[in-house]
Image (cartoon, rainbow, N blue to C red; front, side, top):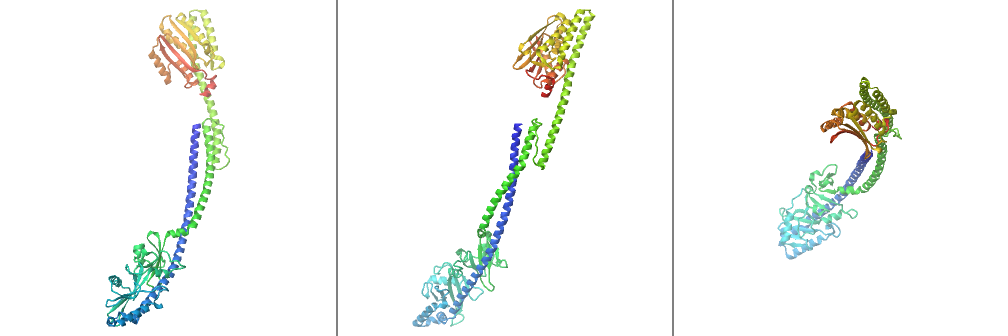
Length: 602
Protein backbone atom coordinates (compact mmCIF):
# COMPACT_ATOMS: atom_id res chain seq x y z
CA UNK A 1 0.00 0.00 0.00
CA UNK A 2 2.91 2.31 0.66
CA UNK A 3 4.13 1.82 -2.90
CA UNK A 4 0.67 2.65 -4.24
CA UNK A 5 0.51 5.73 -2.06
CA UNK A 6 3.84 6.96 -3.39
CA UNK A 7 2.60 6.47 -6.91
CA UNK A 8 -0.52 8.43 -6.02
CA UNK A 9 1.65 11.25 -4.66
CA UNK A 10 3.51 11.47 -7.92
CA UNK A 11 0.23 11.53 -9.83
CA UNK A 12 -1.01 14.35 -7.60
CA UNK A 13 2.12 16.37 -8.20
CA UNK A 14 1.66 15.86 -11.92
CA UNK A 15 -1.95 17.01 -11.72
CA UNK A 16 -1.01 20.12 -9.75
CA UNK A 17 1.79 20.88 -12.19
CA UNK A 18 -0.62 20.48 -15.08
CA UNK A 19 -3.16 22.79 -13.46
CA UNK A 20 -0.49 25.37 -12.68
CA UNK A 21 0.85 25.11 -16.20
CA UNK A 22 -2.60 25.49 -17.76
CA UNK A 23 -3.55 28.41 -15.52
CA UNK A 24 -0.19 30.12 -15.95
CA UNK A 25 -0.26 29.61 -19.71
CA UNK A 26 -3.84 30.91 -19.88
CA UNK A 27 -3.10 34.00 -17.84
CA UNK A 28 0.15 34.53 -19.72
CA UNK A 29 -1.64 34.38 -23.06
CA UNK A 30 -4.33 36.78 -21.82
CA UNK A 31 -1.76 39.23 -20.47
CA UNK A 32 0.36 38.96 -23.59
CA UNK A 33 -2.67 39.59 -25.78
CA UNK A 34 -3.74 42.58 -23.70
CA UNK A 35 -0.19 43.87 -23.61
CA UNK A 36 0.14 43.35 -27.34
CA UNK A 37 -3.11 45.20 -27.99
CA UNK A 38 -2.00 48.06 -25.74
CA UNK A 39 1.43 48.26 -27.34
CA UNK A 40 -0.02 48.02 -30.83
CA UNK A 41 -2.55 50.74 -30.03
CA UNK A 42 0.20 52.95 -28.62
CA UNK A 43 2.40 52.32 -31.65
CA UNK A 44 -0.47 53.13 -34.00
CA UNK A 45 -1.15 56.32 -32.07
CA UNK A 46 2.57 57.15 -32.20
CA UNK A 47 2.52 56.39 -35.92
CA UNK A 48 -0.42 58.74 -36.50
CA UNK A 49 1.21 61.45 -34.42
CA UNK A 50 4.50 60.88 -36.21
CA UNK A 51 2.84 61.16 -39.61
CA UNK A 52 1.03 64.35 -38.63
CA UNK A 53 4.18 65.84 -37.19
CA UNK A 54 6.16 64.83 -40.28
CA UNK A 55 3.56 66.37 -42.57
CA UNK A 56 3.83 69.65 -40.65
CA UNK A 57 7.62 69.65 -40.91
CA UNK A 58 7.50 68.70 -44.59
CA UNK A 59 5.02 71.49 -45.34
CA UNK A 60 7.28 74.07 -43.67
CA UNK A 61 10.36 72.70 -45.39
CA UNK A 62 8.61 72.60 -48.76
CA UNK A 63 7.67 76.28 -48.46
CA UNK A 64 11.28 77.14 -47.65
CA UNK A 65 12.62 75.07 -50.55
CA UNK A 66 10.08 76.60 -52.89
CA UNK A 67 11.00 80.10 -51.72
CA UNK A 68 14.73 79.40 -52.08
CA UNK A 69 14.24 77.97 -55.56
CA UNK A 70 12.30 81.10 -56.52
CA UNK A 71 15.07 83.29 -55.16
CA UNK A 72 17.58 81.41 -57.29
CA UNK A 73 15.28 81.80 -60.28
CA UNK A 74 14.95 85.53 -59.62
CA UNK A 75 18.74 85.78 -59.58
CA UNK A 76 18.86 83.91 -62.85
CA UNK A 77 16.21 86.09 -64.47
CA UNK A 78 18.00 89.27 -63.43
CA UNK A 79 21.30 87.93 -64.69
CA UNK A 80 20.08 86.82 -68.11
CA UNK A 81 18.25 90.12 -68.50
CA UNK A 82 21.28 92.16 -67.40
CA UNK A 83 22.88 94.23 -70.13
CA UNK A 84 26.29 93.43 -68.70
CA UNK A 85 25.71 89.65 -69.04
CA UNK A 86 24.32 89.99 -72.53
CA UNK A 87 27.20 92.20 -73.59
CA UNK A 88 29.64 89.69 -72.14
CA UNK A 89 28.09 86.80 -74.05
CA UNK A 90 27.61 88.70 -77.28
CA UNK A 91 29.68 87.42 -80.20
CA UNK A 92 30.88 90.92 -80.91
CA UNK A 93 32.45 91.08 -77.45
CA UNK A 94 35.68 89.55 -78.74
CA UNK A 95 35.99 92.29 -81.33
CA UNK A 96 36.05 95.02 -78.73
CA UNK A 97 39.22 96.61 -77.50
CA UNK A 98 41.04 95.19 -74.55
CA UNK A 99 39.98 98.14 -72.46
CA UNK A 100 36.31 97.66 -73.24
CA UNK A 101 36.52 93.94 -72.47
CA UNK A 102 38.31 94.64 -69.19
CA UNK A 103 35.67 97.19 -68.17
CA UNK A 104 32.83 94.73 -68.99
CA UNK A 105 34.42 91.99 -66.85
CA UNK A 106 34.87 94.44 -63.97
CA UNK A 107 31.24 95.44 -64.23
CA UNK A 108 30.29 91.73 -64.15
CA UNK A 109 32.31 91.15 -61.01
CA UNK A 110 30.73 94.12 -59.28
CA UNK A 111 27.32 92.82 -60.33
CA UNK A 112 27.94 89.53 -58.54
CA UNK A 113 28.57 91.35 -55.26
CA UNK A 114 25.24 93.17 -55.24
CA UNK A 115 22.92 92.18 -52.44
CA UNK A 116 20.25 91.18 -54.91
CA UNK A 117 22.37 88.25 -56.05
CA UNK A 118 22.98 86.85 -52.58
CA UNK A 119 20.85 83.84 -51.62
CA UNK A 120 21.53 84.22 -47.95
CA UNK A 121 23.81 86.66 -46.09
CA UNK A 122 27.34 85.34 -46.28
CA UNK A 123 26.74 83.06 -49.30
CA UNK A 124 27.62 84.38 -52.72
CA UNK A 125 26.39 82.91 -55.94
CA UNK A 126 28.63 80.38 -57.68
CA UNK A 127 28.16 81.22 -61.33
CA UNK A 128 29.06 79.84 -64.74
CA UNK A 129 28.30 81.47 -68.11
CA UNK A 130 28.61 79.39 -71.28
CA UNK A 131 28.42 81.81 -74.14
CA UNK A 132 27.13 80.77 -77.53
CA UNK A 133 30.51 81.17 -79.16
CA UNK A 134 32.14 78.74 -76.69
CA UNK A 135 33.58 81.16 -74.18
CA UNK A 136 33.16 80.17 -70.53
CA UNK A 137 33.18 82.54 -67.58
CA UNK A 138 32.99 81.37 -63.96
CA UNK A 139 33.89 82.26 -60.40
CA UNK A 140 34.30 78.60 -59.33
CA UNK A 141 37.84 79.36 -58.23
CA UNK A 142 37.04 82.69 -56.56
CA UNK A 143 37.42 85.47 -59.16
CA UNK A 144 34.96 85.75 -62.01
CA UNK A 145 36.97 85.38 -65.19
CA UNK A 146 37.14 83.54 -68.47
CA UNK A 147 38.23 79.89 -68.32
CA UNK A 148 39.47 77.78 -71.15
CA UNK A 149 40.95 74.74 -69.36
CA UNK A 150 39.75 71.21 -69.98
CA UNK A 151 38.18 70.70 -66.52
CA UNK A 152 35.98 73.76 -66.89
CA UNK A 153 34.95 72.83 -70.41
CA UNK A 154 34.19 69.26 -69.32
CA UNK A 155 32.01 70.52 -66.49
CA UNK A 156 30.23 72.91 -68.86
CA UNK A 157 29.54 70.06 -71.27
CA UNK A 158 28.12 67.90 -68.43
CA UNK A 159 25.88 70.73 -67.25
CA UNK A 160 24.70 71.44 -70.76
CA UNK A 161 23.80 67.78 -71.33
CA UNK A 162 21.36 67.66 -68.41
CA UNK A 163 17.83 66.95 -69.67
CA UNK A 164 15.49 69.92 -70.04
CA UNK A 165 12.52 70.22 -67.74
CA UNK A 166 9.02 71.45 -68.39
CA UNK A 167 9.75 74.78 -66.64
CA UNK A 168 11.71 77.68 -68.23
CA UNK A 169 14.61 76.79 -66.06
CA UNK A 170 16.21 73.54 -64.88
CA UNK A 171 16.99 72.59 -61.28
CA UNK A 172 18.83 69.29 -61.11
CA UNK A 173 21.62 67.46 -59.35
CA UNK A 174 24.98 68.65 -60.56
CA UNK A 175 27.44 66.06 -61.91
CA UNK A 176 30.49 65.14 -59.91
CA UNK A 177 33.45 67.48 -60.48
CA UNK A 178 36.40 68.66 -58.46
CA UNK A 179 35.50 72.22 -59.46
CA UNK A 180 32.13 72.21 -57.71
CA UNK A 181 31.86 73.98 -54.37
CA UNK A 182 30.44 70.88 -52.72
CA UNK A 183 30.17 67.18 -53.50
CA UNK A 184 26.38 67.38 -53.38
CA UNK A 185 25.26 70.45 -55.30
CA UNK A 186 22.25 71.58 -57.31
CA UNK A 187 22.55 73.30 -60.65
CA UNK A 188 20.18 75.96 -61.88
CA UNK A 189 20.22 76.34 -65.67
CA UNK A 190 18.53 78.93 -67.84
CA UNK A 191 19.15 79.42 -71.56
CA UNK A 192 18.98 82.86 -73.17
CA UNK A 193 19.82 84.59 -76.46
CA UNK A 194 22.52 87.23 -76.91
CA UNK A 195 22.03 90.64 -78.46
CA UNK A 196 23.68 89.69 -81.75
CA UNK A 197 21.13 87.07 -82.70
CA UNK A 198 18.41 84.85 -81.36
CA UNK A 199 20.06 81.76 -82.70
CA UNK A 200 23.10 82.22 -80.56
CA UNK A 201 21.98 80.50 -77.32
CA UNK A 202 23.96 81.01 -74.15
CA UNK A 203 23.48 79.21 -70.83
CA UNK A 204 23.56 80.49 -67.29
CA UNK A 205 24.40 78.06 -64.49
CA UNK A 206 23.94 78.85 -60.82
CA UNK A 207 25.47 76.21 -58.53
CA UNK A 208 23.95 75.90 -55.05
CA UNK A 209 25.22 73.56 -52.38
CA UNK A 210 22.85 70.99 -50.86
CA UNK A 211 23.87 72.33 -47.45
CA UNK A 212 22.62 75.81 -48.41
CA UNK A 213 19.13 74.44 -48.93
CA UNK A 214 19.30 72.39 -45.70
CA UNK A 215 20.33 75.47 -43.76
CA UNK A 216 17.26 77.24 -45.06
CA UNK A 217 14.86 74.52 -43.86
CA UNK A 218 16.26 74.25 -40.33
CA UNK A 219 13.56 74.40 -37.67
CA UNK A 220 14.78 75.32 -34.20
CA UNK A 221 18.28 74.72 -35.52
CA UNK A 222 17.49 71.12 -36.54
CA UNK A 223 17.15 69.74 -40.05
CA UNK A 224 14.35 67.12 -40.37
CA UNK A 225 15.76 63.60 -40.17
CA UNK A 226 15.58 61.40 -43.28
CA UNK A 227 14.12 64.34 -45.21
CA UNK A 228 14.33 64.81 -48.98
CA UNK A 229 12.90 66.82 -51.86
CA UNK A 230 12.22 65.16 -55.20
CA UNK A 231 11.28 66.57 -58.58
CA UNK A 232 8.48 65.56 -60.93
CA UNK A 233 10.44 62.52 -62.10
CA UNK A 234 11.00 61.10 -58.63
CA UNK A 235 14.70 62.05 -58.42
CA UNK A 236 15.98 63.18 -55.03
CA UNK A 237 17.39 66.73 -55.32
CA UNK A 238 17.89 67.72 -51.68
CA UNK A 239 18.33 65.49 -48.62
CA UNK A 240 20.04 65.27 -45.28
CA UNK A 241 21.10 61.77 -46.39
CA UNK A 242 23.87 62.30 -48.98
CA UNK A 243 23.52 58.80 -50.37
CA UNK A 244 19.93 59.53 -51.41
CA UNK A 245 20.78 62.48 -53.67
CA UNK A 246 20.45 61.72 -57.37
CA UNK A 247 18.57 58.43 -56.85
CA UNK A 248 14.84 57.86 -57.38
CA UNK A 249 12.23 56.62 -54.93
CA UNK A 250 11.90 53.26 -56.68
CA UNK A 251 15.54 52.45 -55.98
CA UNK A 252 15.51 53.74 -52.43
CA UNK A 253 12.10 52.77 -51.08
CA UNK A 254 10.58 50.39 -53.61
CA UNK A 255 7.90 52.98 -54.50
CA UNK A 256 7.35 54.65 -57.85
CA UNK A 257 7.13 58.42 -57.72
CA UNK A 258 3.61 58.41 -59.15
CA UNK A 259 2.53 56.24 -56.17
CA UNK A 260 3.17 59.14 -53.84
CA UNK A 261 -0.20 60.67 -54.45
CA UNK A 262 -3.56 60.65 -52.74
CA UNK A 263 -5.03 61.75 -49.44
CA UNK A 264 -3.22 59.36 -47.10
CA UNK A 265 0.10 61.21 -47.47
CA UNK A 266 2.09 58.10 -46.52
CA UNK A 267 2.99 54.71 -47.96
CA UNK A 268 4.70 51.62 -46.56
CA UNK A 269 8.20 51.48 -47.95
CA UNK A 270 10.62 48.58 -48.12
CA UNK A 271 11.72 47.39 -44.71
CA UNK A 272 8.32 48.16 -43.24
CA UNK A 273 9.07 51.87 -42.77
CA UNK A 274 6.63 54.67 -43.54
CA UNK A 275 7.33 57.19 -46.30
CA UNK A 276 5.42 60.41 -45.60
CA UNK A 277 5.02 62.81 -48.54
CA UNK A 278 3.52 66.24 -49.12
CA UNK A 279 3.28 68.33 -52.29
CA UNK A 280 1.96 71.85 -52.41
CA UNK A 281 -0.54 72.62 -55.14
CA UNK A 282 1.20 74.16 -58.18
CA UNK A 283 4.66 73.21 -56.93
CA UNK A 284 7.16 71.15 -58.88
CA UNK A 285 8.69 69.71 -55.70
CA UNK A 286 7.50 66.94 -53.39
CA UNK A 287 8.80 66.77 -49.85
CA UNK A 288 9.25 63.30 -48.29
CA UNK A 289 10.37 61.96 -44.93
CA UNK A 290 11.13 58.35 -44.03
CA UNK A 291 9.83 57.34 -40.60
CA UNK A 292 11.32 54.19 -39.06
CA UNK A 293 9.06 51.88 -37.10
CA UNK A 294 11.72 51.79 -34.42
CA UNK A 295 10.95 55.48 -33.88
CA UNK A 296 7.31 54.61 -33.17
CA UNK A 297 8.37 51.87 -30.79
CA UNK A 298 10.82 54.27 -29.18
CA UNK A 299 8.06 56.83 -28.75
CA UNK A 300 5.92 54.12 -27.16
CA UNK A 301 8.74 52.88 -24.93
CA UNK A 302 7.27 54.29 -21.75
CA UNK A 303 3.92 52.71 -22.29
CA UNK A 304 5.65 49.49 -23.34
CA UNK A 305 7.73 49.48 -20.14
CA UNK A 306 4.58 50.21 -18.13
CA UNK A 307 2.68 47.43 -19.86
CA UNK A 308 5.55 44.98 -19.32
CA UNK A 309 5.71 45.87 -15.62
CA UNK A 310 1.95 45.49 -15.31
CA UNK A 311 2.16 42.17 -17.16
CA UNK A 312 4.81 40.92 -14.73
CA UNK A 313 2.73 42.02 -11.74
CA UNK A 314 -0.42 40.43 -13.15
CA UNK A 315 1.43 37.26 -14.03
CA UNK A 316 2.65 37.05 -10.43
CA UNK A 317 -0.88 37.58 -9.14
CA UNK A 318 -2.30 35.09 -11.60
CA UNK A 319 0.34 32.53 -10.71
CA UNK A 320 -0.46 32.94 -7.00
CA UNK A 321 -4.15 32.57 -7.80
CA UNK A 322 -3.42 29.53 -9.97
CA UNK A 323 -1.39 27.98 -7.17
CA UNK A 324 -4.22 28.56 -4.70
CA UNK A 325 -6.80 27.10 -7.09
CA UNK A 326 -4.63 24.08 -7.85
CA UNK A 327 -4.11 23.54 -4.12
CA UNK A 328 -7.83 23.96 -3.55
CA UNK A 329 -8.53 21.30 -6.17
CA UNK A 330 -5.76 18.78 -5.58
CA UNK A 331 -5.60 18.75 -1.75
CA UNK A 332 -9.09 17.15 -1.35
CA UNK A 333 -8.33 14.79 -4.22
CA UNK A 334 -5.08 13.74 -2.58
CA UNK A 335 -6.84 13.16 0.72
CA UNK A 336 -9.52 11.14 -1.06
CA UNK A 337 -6.83 9.12 -2.83
CA UNK A 338 -5.12 8.35 0.48
CA UNK A 339 -8.41 7.16 1.95
CA UNK A 340 -9.02 4.98 -1.09
CA UNK A 341 -5.63 3.31 -0.82
CA UNK A 342 -6.16 2.74 2.89
CA UNK A 343 -9.46 1.10 2.02
CA UNK A 344 -7.73 -0.98 -0.65
CA UNK A 345 -5.31 -2.12 2.07
CA UNK A 346 -8.22 -3.52 4.07
CA UNK A 347 -8.97 -0.68 6.48
CA UNK A 348 -12.75 -0.30 6.40
CA UNK A 349 -12.84 2.29 9.20
CA UNK A 350 -11.50 5.24 7.14
CA UNK A 351 -13.76 8.21 6.43
CA UNK A 352 -13.20 11.14 4.06
CA UNK A 353 -15.51 13.60 5.88
CA UNK A 354 -15.44 16.44 3.28
CA UNK A 355 -15.32 20.06 4.46
CA UNK A 356 -17.26 21.47 1.53
CA UNK A 357 -20.38 20.47 -0.32
CA UNK A 358 -18.94 21.00 -3.79
CA UNK A 359 -18.40 18.30 -6.43
CA UNK A 360 -15.42 16.83 -4.58
CA UNK A 361 -17.42 16.92 -1.34
CA UNK A 362 -20.23 15.01 -3.06
CA UNK A 363 -17.74 12.37 -4.19
CA UNK A 364 -16.39 12.23 -0.62
CA UNK A 365 -19.87 11.61 0.82
CA UNK A 366 -20.45 8.88 -1.72
CA UNK A 367 -17.09 7.36 -0.82
CA UNK A 368 -17.93 7.29 2.90
CA UNK A 369 -21.30 5.71 2.13
CA UNK A 370 -19.64 3.17 -0.15
CA UNK A 371 -17.07 2.21 2.54
CA UNK A 372 -19.87 1.63 5.06
CA UNK A 373 -21.78 -0.56 2.63
CA UNK A 374 -18.60 -2.38 1.62
CA UNK A 375 -17.74 -3.07 5.25
CA UNK A 376 -21.20 -4.50 5.87
CA UNK A 377 -20.98 -6.60 2.70
CA UNK A 378 -17.55 -7.92 3.70
CA UNK A 379 -18.85 -8.87 7.14
CA UNK A 380 -21.73 -10.72 5.56
CA UNK A 381 -19.42 -12.38 3.06
CA UNK A 382 -16.96 -13.35 5.78
CA UNK A 383 -19.73 -14.89 7.88
CA UNK A 384 -21.10 -16.73 4.86
CA UNK A 385 -17.64 -17.98 3.94
CA UNK A 386 -17.04 -19.09 7.54
CA UNK A 387 -20.22 -21.10 7.56
CA UNK A 388 -19.51 -22.53 4.13
CA UNK A 389 -15.99 -23.67 4.96
CA UNK A 390 -17.07 -24.96 8.34
CA UNK A 391 -19.65 -27.09 6.59
CA UNK A 392 -17.01 -28.31 4.14
CA UNK A 393 -14.70 -29.37 6.97
CA UNK A 394 -17.53 -31.10 8.77
CA UNK A 395 -18.40 -32.94 5.61
CA UNK A 396 -14.79 -34.02 5.11
CA UNK A 397 -14.61 -35.35 8.68
CA UNK A 398 -17.89 -37.16 8.26
CA UNK A 399 -16.39 -38.89 5.22
CA UNK A 400 -13.66 -40.32 7.46
CA UNK A 401 -15.75 -41.47 10.41
CA UNK A 402 -18.28 -43.55 8.43
CA UNK A 403 -15.47 -45.15 6.49
CA UNK A 404 -13.68 -46.22 9.66
CA UNK A 405 -16.89 -47.22 11.44
CA UNK A 406 -17.84 -49.39 8.54
CA UNK A 407 -14.55 -51.28 8.71
CA UNK A 408 -14.65 -51.54 12.54
CA UNK A 409 -18.21 -52.77 12.60
CA UNK A 410 -17.29 -55.32 9.98
CA UNK A 411 -14.51 -56.50 12.29
CA UNK A 412 -16.93 -56.72 15.24
CA UNK A 413 -19.39 -58.72 13.13
CA UNK A 414 -16.60 -61.06 12.10
CA UNK A 415 -15.48 -61.51 15.72
CA UNK A 416 -19.04 -62.11 16.87
CA UNK A 417 -19.55 -64.68 14.14
CA UNK A 418 -16.47 -66.43 15.46
CA UNK A 419 -17.92 -66.20 19.02
CA UNK A 420 -14.90 -64.31 20.27
CA UNK A 421 -16.77 -62.46 22.95
CA UNK A 422 -13.72 -61.13 24.80
CA UNK A 423 -12.33 -59.66 21.60
CA UNK A 424 -15.72 -58.13 20.82
CA UNK A 425 -15.83 -56.47 24.23
CA UNK A 426 -12.26 -55.18 23.92
CA UNK A 427 -12.71 -53.79 20.42
CA UNK A 428 -15.98 -52.20 21.43
CA UNK A 429 -14.24 -50.42 24.33
CA UNK A 430 -11.46 -49.24 22.01
CA UNK A 431 -14.08 -48.01 19.54
CA UNK A 432 -15.78 -46.06 22.31
CA UNK A 433 -12.45 -44.50 23.34
CA UNK A 434 -11.66 -43.76 19.69
CA UNK A 435 -14.97 -41.97 19.13
CA UNK A 436 -14.58 -39.98 22.37
CA UNK A 437 -11.15 -38.79 21.24
CA UNK A 438 -12.55 -37.96 17.79
CA UNK A 439 -15.02 -35.55 19.33
CA UNK A 440 -12.27 -33.71 21.27
CA UNK A 441 -14.83 -31.47 22.97
CA UNK A 442 -15.61 -29.80 19.63
CA UNK A 443 -12.02 -28.59 19.06
CA UNK A 444 -10.59 -28.60 15.55
CA UNK A 445 -6.95 -28.40 16.65
CA UNK A 446 -5.59 -30.83 19.21
CA UNK A 447 -2.05 -31.52 20.56
CA UNK A 448 0.05 -34.08 18.76
CA UNK A 449 -0.08 -36.15 21.94
CA UNK A 450 -3.88 -36.54 21.69
CA UNK A 451 -3.66 -37.32 17.97
CA UNK A 452 -1.14 -40.09 18.74
CA UNK A 453 -3.51 -41.46 21.43
CA UNK A 454 -6.26 -41.53 18.86
CA UNK A 455 -4.00 -43.50 16.48
CA UNK A 456 -3.08 -45.93 19.27
CA UNK A 457 -6.78 -46.71 19.87
CA UNK A 458 -7.20 -47.27 16.16
CA UNK A 459 -4.16 -49.60 16.03
CA UNK A 460 -5.48 -51.67 18.92
CA UNK A 461 -8.80 -52.00 17.12
CA UNK A 462 -7.04 -53.10 13.94
CA UNK A 463 -4.70 -55.44 15.85
CA UNK A 464 -7.74 -57.34 17.02
CA UNK A 465 -8.55 -58.04 13.39
CA UNK A 466 -5.13 -58.67 11.90
CA UNK A 467 -3.44 -60.19 14.89
CA UNK A 468 0.26 -61.00 14.57
CA UNK A 469 0.69 -59.77 10.96
CA UNK A 470 0.65 -56.12 12.15
CA UNK A 471 3.34 -54.52 14.25
CA UNK A 472 3.25 -50.81 15.01
CA UNK A 473 5.90 -48.56 16.54
CA UNK A 474 5.78 -44.94 17.62
CA UNK A 475 8.71 -42.50 17.49
CA UNK A 476 7.41 -39.26 19.01
CA UNK A 477 9.75 -36.39 19.87
CA UNK A 478 8.79 -34.90 23.29
CA UNK A 479 9.06 -31.34 21.93
CA UNK A 480 6.42 -32.19 19.30
CA UNK A 481 3.77 -33.56 21.67
CA UNK A 482 2.42 -30.11 22.63
CA UNK A 483 2.22 -28.74 19.07
CA UNK A 484 -1.34 -28.16 17.89
CA UNK A 485 -2.45 -29.87 14.69
CA UNK A 486 -5.76 -30.59 12.93
CA UNK A 487 -7.29 -33.75 14.36
CA UNK A 488 -7.85 -36.96 12.41
CA UNK A 489 -4.81 -36.51 10.19
CA UNK A 490 -2.70 -39.59 11.06
CA UNK A 491 -5.45 -42.23 11.37
CA UNK A 492 -6.34 -42.25 7.64
CA UNK A 493 -2.65 -42.57 6.72
CA UNK A 494 -2.24 -45.50 9.13
CA UNK A 495 -5.36 -47.06 7.68
CA UNK A 496 -3.95 -46.75 4.14
CA UNK A 497 -0.65 -48.25 5.34
CA UNK A 498 -2.57 -51.26 6.66
CA UNK A 499 -4.87 -51.85 3.70
CA UNK A 500 -2.52 -50.95 0.84
CA UNK A 501 0.79 -51.89 2.40
CA UNK A 502 0.98 -54.44 5.22
CA UNK A 503 -2.12 -56.37 4.17
CA UNK A 504 -0.71 -56.90 0.68
CA UNK A 505 2.38 -58.71 2.02
CA UNK A 506 0.45 -61.83 3.01
CA UNK A 507 2.97 -62.62 5.71
CA UNK A 508 3.57 -61.72 9.35
CA UNK A 509 6.33 -59.21 8.74
CA UNK A 510 4.15 -56.11 8.32
CA UNK A 511 5.50 -53.11 10.18
CA UNK A 512 4.09 -49.61 10.62
CA UNK A 513 5.97 -46.79 12.27
CA UNK A 514 4.42 -43.45 13.27
CA UNK A 515 6.89 -40.54 13.70
CA UNK A 516 6.51 -36.94 14.91
CA UNK A 517 9.35 -34.40 14.77
CA UNK A 518 9.73 -30.65 15.24
CA UNK A 519 12.43 -29.31 12.91
CA UNK A 520 13.02 -25.74 11.68
CA UNK A 521 9.72 -24.54 13.18
CA UNK A 522 7.93 -27.20 11.16
CA UNK A 523 5.96 -30.20 12.44
CA UNK A 524 6.81 -33.32 10.47
CA UNK A 525 4.41 -36.26 10.76
CA UNK A 526 5.31 -39.49 8.95
CA UNK A 527 3.76 -42.95 8.64
CA UNK A 528 6.21 -45.64 7.52
CA UNK A 529 5.20 -49.10 6.28
CA UNK A 530 7.09 -51.91 4.59
CA UNK A 531 4.44 -52.51 1.95
CA UNK A 532 5.10 -53.15 -1.73
CA UNK A 533 4.23 -49.73 -3.23
CA UNK A 534 7.02 -48.65 -5.58
CA UNK A 535 8.40 -45.16 -6.39
CA UNK A 536 6.34 -44.90 -9.60
CA UNK A 537 3.13 -45.24 -7.64
CA UNK A 538 4.38 -42.65 -5.14
CA UNK A 539 5.04 -40.20 -7.97
CA UNK A 540 1.54 -40.81 -9.34
CA UNK A 541 0.05 -40.13 -5.93
CA UNK A 542 2.06 -36.93 -5.54
CA UNK A 543 0.99 -35.66 -8.97
CA UNK A 544 -2.62 -36.36 -8.13
CA UNK A 545 -2.29 -34.49 -4.82
CA UNK A 546 -0.77 -31.46 -6.56
CA UNK A 547 -3.53 -31.46 -9.16
CA UNK A 548 -6.30 -31.83 -6.59
CA UNK A 549 -7.40 -35.19 -8.00
CA UNK A 550 -9.26 -37.68 -5.87
CA UNK A 551 -7.14 -40.72 -4.93
CA UNK A 552 -9.23 -42.16 -2.15
CA UNK A 553 -11.47 -40.80 0.59
CA UNK A 554 -8.85 -40.73 3.36
CA UNK A 555 -5.91 -39.31 1.45
CA UNK A 556 -7.98 -36.75 -0.51
CA UNK A 557 -9.68 -35.64 2.70
CA UNK A 558 -6.35 -35.02 4.43
CA UNK A 559 -5.01 -33.10 1.43
CA UNK A 560 -8.12 -30.93 1.20
CA UNK A 561 -8.13 -30.19 4.92
CA UNK A 562 -4.46 -29.15 4.79
CA UNK A 563 -5.29 -26.72 1.98
CA UNK A 564 -8.14 -25.25 3.99
CA UNK A 565 -6.24 -24.96 7.27
CA UNK A 566 -2.84 -23.97 5.82
CA UNK A 567 -3.24 -22.47 2.33
CA UNK A 568 0.08 -22.93 0.56
CA UNK A 569 1.93 -23.74 3.79
CA UNK A 570 1.31 -27.50 4.36
CA UNK A 571 1.91 -30.56 2.19
CA UNK A 572 1.16 -34.26 2.02
CA UNK A 573 3.63 -36.30 -0.04
CA UNK A 574 4.56 -39.96 -0.59
CA UNK A 575 8.06 -41.35 -1.19
CA UNK A 576 9.94 -44.63 -1.30
CA UNK A 577 13.07 -45.08 0.83
CA UNK A 578 14.80 -48.45 0.80
CA UNK A 579 12.03 -50.93 1.66
CA UNK A 580 9.75 -48.36 3.21
CA UNK A 581 6.82 -46.41 1.84
CA UNK A 582 6.53 -43.08 3.64
CA UNK A 583 3.51 -40.77 3.86
CA UNK A 584 4.80 -37.40 5.14
CA UNK A 585 2.84 -34.37 6.35
CA UNK A 586 4.55 -30.98 6.77
CA UNK A 587 2.68 -28.24 8.63
CA UNK A 588 3.88 -24.98 10.27
CA UNK A 589 4.65 -25.00 13.96
CA UNK A 590 1.97 -22.35 14.50
CA UNK A 591 -1.11 -22.31 12.33
CA UNK A 592 -4.20 -21.74 14.38
CA UNK A 593 -6.11 -22.93 17.39
CA UNK A 594 -9.61 -23.51 16.10
CA UNK A 595 -11.67 -23.67 12.95
CA UNK A 596 -12.87 -20.03 12.91
CA UNK A 597 -9.43 -18.52 13.35
CA UNK A 598 -8.18 -20.66 10.49
CA UNK A 599 -11.06 -19.60 8.28
CA UNK A 600 -10.43 -15.91 9.04
CA UNK A 601 -6.79 -16.28 8.12
CA UNK A 602 -7.69 -18.06 4.88
